[in-house]
Image (cartoon, rainbow, N blue to C red):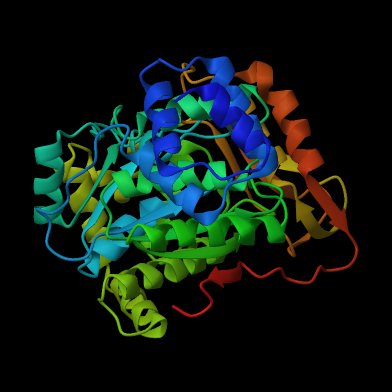
Length: 437
């Protein structure tokens, strides 16, 4: 078998066989296939696409390129949640303890962020002492005992995906639905879940900018899950403005804690209830989404969800007192307000620009090796639809690098559009695949 023949075959729009897909992934993963041939095949896939069978088999070949988590020692149906990424998305911090408090085991492997803020494990490392590097046996034992654990994704989980993504990033082949879908689903399947809930973001702060593309990606990932025996549901949700108000690692931890106390932003709370009730339904803990939502609201009101988060923090070596004493979290030296330039209603907030300003402050990574400042970021005091008076604070900047303060301030101001007419509200949940769960 030769890579030349695979490239030619896909360039002509023909199907790749199972053996050919496995040959490509195994050969590239072990270094036998050079970057230039892999890049040529990726470009052919970009233009010619993959059918459902090819996409599912590519997913499993990537999944099998490394280790697979064995969660069989944890009783019950394990449900994983994945977000395609957005600005201010701290839902995992709320969902893990909330769903665990409902009796669903949550064995969560998360990544570090590359972009505007850190990933879930970066955010959790804002909590003093929190350990994200549990050994596999410790990980399983904690989920059995506490009901939840969140750890950094292991280096050998779907390693072919890491190589392929780095190559796609420099060869203009990232925006391919079958390649995106196989990348996401290979990691989720390797992580050992029985069922998967996908949060597919769409809007200015999301990878998918248009609704049609988001639905296409959602349908492709759900089909992959179905083909490999994982019950999979995708929710298409709005990311035309940041989720919640906080953007930045320690700031997002505070907002997640507020949400577990029942005092978080309405959009963040609503998304957590939507995602969480779907997880409960797939795990067999509720007979309907409505029943699941009611369970979750009761767990928030009773304080049991917050108690579960404190238990999770303690189990992983962190300081549980952060839930009552925010002063124990990292704090920036400079806190400054950004006044509104005119009066009116907030028409829109460009989420990508808000994310960029947070990265300028040091909340995210421009390169993988970059260090994150866990204390910095910003809080949006006005969201879309809110009225604002000239001089009133639009947002609060938390900064340490004062040299970037002016640029970040201007970027945030440019992200806001203020007009005289109150805009129509945009739905948070745009659709579900499949339509009926």
